[in-house]
Structure formats: structure tokens, C-alpha cells
Amino acid sequence: MNKYEVGTLLLRVFLGFTFFMHGLAKFQVGIENIAGWFTSIGLPSFLAYVVSFIELAGGIALILGLGTRIVSALLALIMIGATFKVKLAAGFLGNGQGAGYELDLALLVMAIFILINGSKLYALDQIFFKSQNQNSKAA
Image (tube, rainbow, N blue to C red):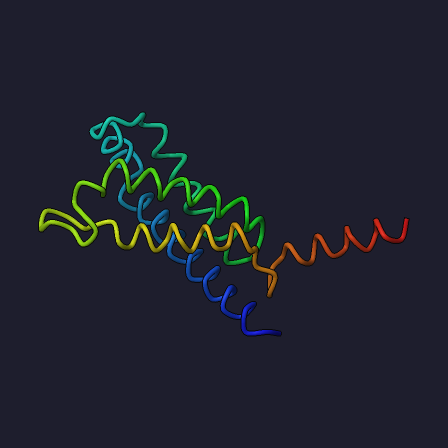
């Protein structure tokens, strides 16, 4: 076990937990309220359901190490959308009327890192792909 993989595991689990909590919060507040807010900022209401599901299920998947690169790509797209559609006008640290995009940018960078590098330590992907690789080598 090397330091690089441990660091990547920490990023993956933190990112997964953060998105899981954000997705859970959307459902707890009432997904219909979130859908209404999406409409109020000019986005189709169905995107609230898509984003919330990706955050909730994607967060769990990241924690478990399942589909990490695909999930990270989806989360990166969500963060790009959130930054440009909602947070950019407030500035990096915010303008007193709301939060800035510093957290969104940090989460985006973490997602891109995992997208590029993957995360193998304690990942279910390793179990599934390891058995597939062994079966293909045996054939």
C-alpha cells in the first residue's frame, strides 16, 4: 500500500461522503422544492431529480469504489454546471449575498483527479475487474 493510493482513497471517500450528504439533503428538504428552485433559475425541473440521484447514488458508489471514474465524470459535470449557473456571479469567496464557488471548485478538482487517476485501494472495482482480468488471461 503506497502513500499515493492512500491519499487517493481519502479523496474518493471524502468526495463520496460530501456528495452523498448533498444528495440526501435535497431529498430531505423535498425534491419538489429543489425542482422548483431549478425552474426558478432557468433549468428544467427534471434536472433536480437527475442531479440529486447522481449525488446520492454516486456518493455511495464513490465510497465503495464502484464505477469511480464514471461517477467522478458525472460529478465534475454537475460542479461545472453549479459553478457557472449559480455561483460564478458571487465570486470565489462570495459577495455577502451567498456562498462563493471555492467549495464547488475544490470538489470539481477532486472529481477530475479521481477521473484521471482512478482509485484502486479498497475499491469494489478492483474485485470485479480483477476477476475479469484473471478470467481473460486464463482463456
